[in-house]
Length: 438
Image (cartoon, rainbow, N blue to C red; front, side):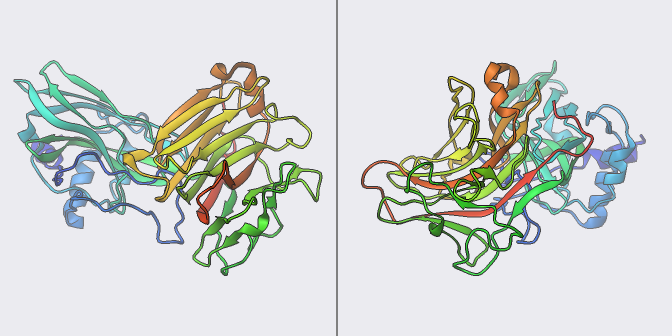
């Protein structure tokens, strides 16, 4: 690499306004027919260069990457091809002024929809130790949207080197530019070279956008009915309280009285509880806005598809998201299976101190094999993981097909009703044909 090329590479940087934590976008697959990715504001953002300048910088940085591992140490042709895309590269600032050298930025070159990945940074100070106010790994897609890895921390970087590992997250399908970034004296700078990540689309097995006229039922637009009321042996749940709102959302409405909306794909009354749809493993996601209030229990779950013939908890069930209305800042995520019940999981704070009353993408990455896992996430940030080995004999409950359920349950006296849970979309993917599902 000649000096001119090196100069172009080291010129790649970014200037951010004061930022307490890197902005994050929903990491689950998002619909392209409803305005694309829904994101918070850039809060100072990473300003773009002109397309000509951006192409030069991306191209220069690309030639130093390893296409197989995403490690910044060796060359590879895949990144050169991606460099031709019109990524909004961040504003030019001399990275050398930071006094730091990036030794390695490791991130996978490719991933699947729903696959949680992390990044690792290794850097060192050129001479004396450098105090860094914040160190993170920033990610932008080709439209400039933010998908930063979770984790930002201060550090004092010595000449002997410093290693930083991010938290895990998932990404929607697409191509991404990845850069290690430091904030020194209030100024953000990208350390070069950047990396590239491609996330592949997995086959969609179930997708519902809830587009239709206000008042239509949850099966509107489906070729066959897939949602049914789920009485669970009593009459407290009703399909009639699940209606489209005319704005592309399903509204589950709890009203005064003992009846609440609960839908599942188990046709208990019409077909002996057989599941209208089921799948063993995959990636399950829903974008929801859930109500707060005493006695409300909105939830998005899986249920064992053979629940009509196999007793719970052996039939299995996974709480992808459940919220206690009186604690809207927490999401409960549990796995139920085996005898006695495994009851694995706990309640987690929502990302960025958010609340369930805001829109969030709740997702589950489920690989059902003997070495598989259940991995929960919110807005692409992984919250917990259960490995098959950790579940023991109860893992048998997660090696069978499951189906889906939505509910706004009422729990306890004097609930705060009326209340409405909104579901923007649901998507389920399977892993690409021919791929392993360990």
